[in-house]
Amino acid sequence: MKDRVKRFPISQRQRIRNLQGEFAVPCQISDRWLSFDAVSSQVGGGEFISLDVFTNPTGDSVKKLCQLVVTREDLLAVLDKIHPKSPSEDN
Image 1 (cartoon, rainbow, N blue to C red):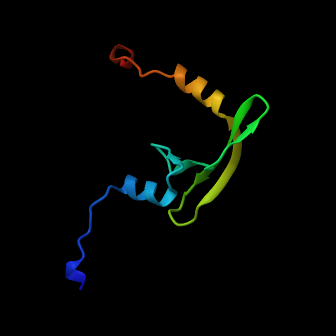
Image 2: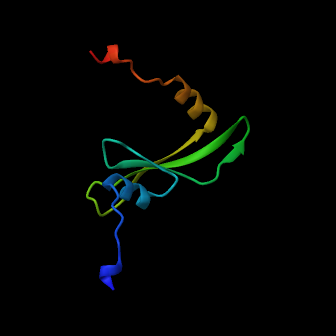
Image 3: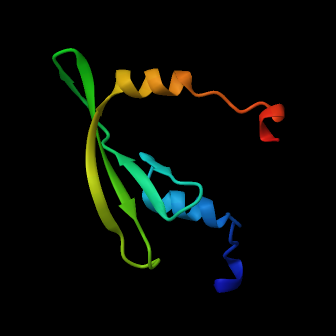
């Protein structure tokens, strides 16, 4: 029966993303990630989004570092200001 099982090769990064879940945003240089709640809350003048910062320093035990509550509006405003570096800036 085992010879019938075909494994699909996935990258280490994809395996980790699969474990973290669809609401996770991984750090590209460390074993940390943001984990967003699936729902948000409308409060006063904005949409509040709760997120947790996790780490997995030993590879076997996940540790929650902190929780943040931010607004969608603040996130989008900051992301809108971030642009890729031009090749001339790399020198």
